[in-house]
Image (cartoon, rainbow, N blue to C red; front, top):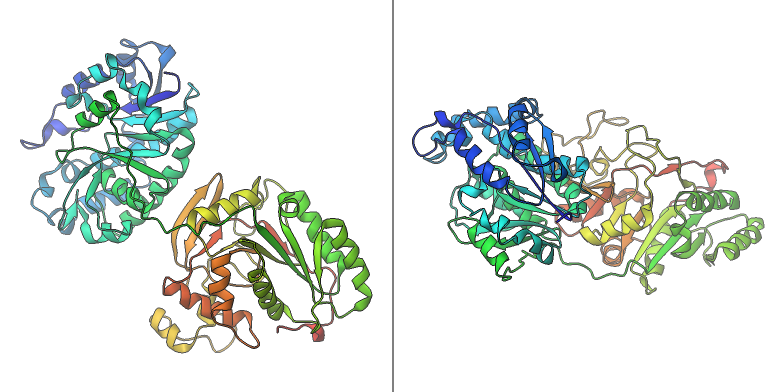
Amino acid sequence: MSKITLVTGIWDIGRSGLTDGWSRPYQHYLDKFEKLLEVDCNLIIYGDKELEEFVYSKRDVSNTQFIRRDLSWFINSEFFDMIQKIRTNPEWYNQVGWLKESTQARLENYNPLVMSKVYLLHDAKIMEKFNSEYLFWIDGGLTNTVHPGYFTHDKVLEKLDKYVSKFSFVCFPYEANTEIHGFEYNKLNELAGAKVNKVARGGFFGGPKESISEINSIYYGLMKSTLAQGFMGTEESIFSIMSYKHSDLINYFEIEGNGLFGKFFEDLKEDRLQVKNENIVKPSYNLDSSKVGLYVITFNSPNQFKTLIDSMLAYDKDYINKTTKFLLNNSTDNSTYSEYQKLCDEYNFEHIIPDEGNLGICGGRQFIAEHFDKTDLDFYLFFEDDMFFYPNEGTTCRNGFNRYVENLYVKSLEIMQKESFDFLKMNYSEFYGDNGTQWSWYNVPQSVRSEFWPNKPRLPQMGLDPNAPKTTFNKVLSHKGVPYASGEVYYCNWPQIVSRPGNQKMFLDVTWAHPFEQTWMSHMYQLVKKSELNPGLLLMTPTEHDRFEHYDSKLRKES
């Protein structure tokens, strides 16, 4: 049983003082918890000093790890005050008759405790001593409704790995009209992206150890944003949103409408569990991440191009070794051609010299989009020759984002596939600004600016506005140590990964005779607002702009 570890804990939060129907003495939980301690698999247990003494009077240290945390840990959490503000708000507790006398409303520590289970599971993943493959949270009082014989006699936990390939919840059908556990129903549907008709239980959940960090990140983001907006249920409300919105990461098992776990463990015992999934995530483009192009625009400096190649090899050789490579040479100095050709031959780039001569930066960008469309590739990376990788591990950009993550090439393509992004910008910080500011605001037509920013409809008469609108991000997630965001990410000519469908929508469905970066930024922002374009942004700054061989500004051409 070393591959599976259960994580649990109990605390006295004063439930014995509630009215009939809600009251329950702490001794009741302690009695049920004692039954759970008879499980012979690994247990990680949270609690205070008294509980630790109780646990080790019943269990051996060889299969038990106690992590001491008393109630002060919940009281000192960043969400404690936000929870108290909502639970004491009459607009919240009067939205439905039962809520005012409930444990959520009456006990200051109830929601801080139950809404911390995911964090406790994640901390257990970090601190566990058993080298487990799977971690599951189990409520300390679950044997109140589940016979302990499932764990001690039937040993159903030994069968879990047959059915759990993703992080998994146990759900029961639930029809709501106004709220779920106090969470306003229409808002919950909006966040889930579907009409929610089931509730994910908080008494038992978990999955493969490697899945927990990403689930923790998603849960944290939802909890932080919903509490900040004044929406609150219990952990089960957020779990329910996640089971719909992140069905690429989450499976579930269904139980009866009474919400009791007995059916789940009986089905597990009898080997008749059915793995279910909402499957409502955006459809995959079914693209092949081994079919990737690398496009570089260069101008009058083989040394700039060579430095870019060297930076890629130093950062992650896959950028050179795993791509089909193209150099678009806009150079007006013919004497550089032979050196460019040597570099292309050495590193296996197709050397493209346009018949029209210098196409300009944006003209070249449009050429790349049209050239890629004629290939059999599914993704491409876009670079200019002065945007080098910064391979120094442990360094950060001016905004505090990491510059280096190992295996970024593969991980960023996995993010593209996972989120079905049309394009993924690689840098948070750029030369003139950063992606925290919504630069599209400067470039959209006035009618669009007034529509989307009614409180900020006018541009400054001169220069930049120090209070320009901020970028709206929908999600902040992490994949294998690479943080990223989705939302209203603006387009610009900085390093990016583009998918085949994205390329079509960005550059081919609508074209301009002489495109400019500002035109694309405006056009693509409007596509994003119509939900027709899905952009992403790495919360990193792996590249740096450095034009160290300058040219006469009169030679600069946009298109």
